[in-house]
Image 1 (cartoon, rainbow, N blue to C red):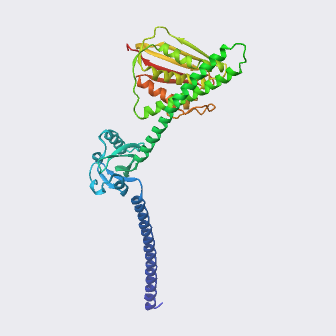
Image 2 (image 1 turned 120 degrees about the vertical axis):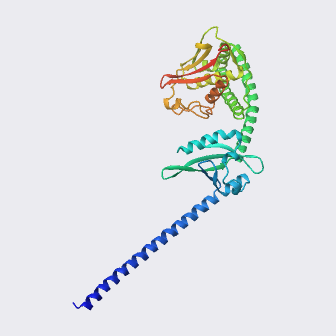
Image 3 (image 1 turned 135 degrees about the vertical axis):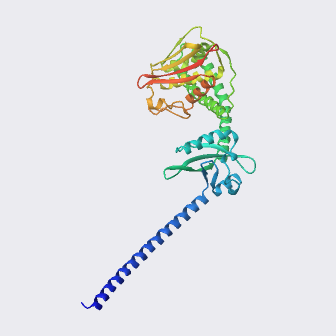
Amino acid sequence: MEPEDKVDSQLHEELERLRRQVVELKARDSARQQVEEELRQAEERYRKLIQGSGDALYTLALDGTLTFLNPAFETATGWSSAEWLGKPFALILHPDDLPLALETFQRVLQGETPPLVELRVLSRAGEYVLGEFVATPDFQEGKVVGAWGLARNISTERTLERQRAELLAMLAHDIKNPLGNILGYTDLLLERVRKRRGTDNEEENLLLRLQSNVLTMHSLVVNYLELSRIEAEQLALIKQPLVLNDLLRRVGQQYEVESQQRRITIEFQLQEELPTIEGDSLALERVFANLLHNALKFTPELGRITVSSATQKEQTVVVAVKDTGPGIAPEEAATIFEKYRRVKSVPPQAGLGLGLFIVKVLVEAHGGQVAVSSTPGQGTCFAVFLPGSGS
């Protein structure tokens, strides 16, 4: 091959290599532009999502200063974002909510995602807006560099819930009195039927069923009224020295007819000369009425309920209500005192799932404790521990 031909060949190869590189660079540039466009579109979508969100979105620096607030914050509080960016979040919160907020923030800085918290935020109008907050750590290269989260305005929701609860409480209160009258008239009719000797027992059985159903309705209504007072923080106890055994016998008399009708034995094993306790008689009657009513619901025919009282060390009085019902599964026993909680491992019974929650609240309001022990298939025992007057 001539030298000139050789040079032309090399030049051609070099040009071809350069051409391929140019094509490759154009392809890369096109791919880069496509990626950049996709990123731009994604950023635009997220920007619209953040700016148009009905929930307030926020970010915090490590020192607790606000670094971002979306328009929903302005809508909920009346403040502009610029008025609060760079300022500590603590300044905008209700003073009573600050300890919970600071504790939550510290958990976030430790890499945790705490559960939802309710905090009150100061509005431009000088009022506090109730919000439901969630916060999570902002990680960069494995380190927490701040926090981000969202908040939902629940002021209107809480107001509606309170109004609904007040309406239901009013209705429950209005229903309670007629139910009490019905129970009184039922007792009177039962007494008259029993005095008429030689008559058929059908009338008595019908009245007993009526009495049992009204007693159940009365218990549901009273429990709901008690719950309304608890949630409104209007639970006021009138404490005075009480002889607990007398109170337990009175509660037992309320369910004497129902237990006889269902052929369930209620046995009292009461220790004599118990220490007196300082308590509200109506509240404690509600406690033991709920426990006894609960035991009757789940105890089968020919079963037995034992109500016992005893003294433990340091003058603590213990009252136990034990039944021979189906028992409670271990995984359910741990949550049995939660509001609206109903046992799923046994056949459904009438009720709202409030009785045991109210028992726990009222017992703790007396400085006591309530515990449950149960063996599936053998029965359940609820134990109430109350401090004696001398403890």
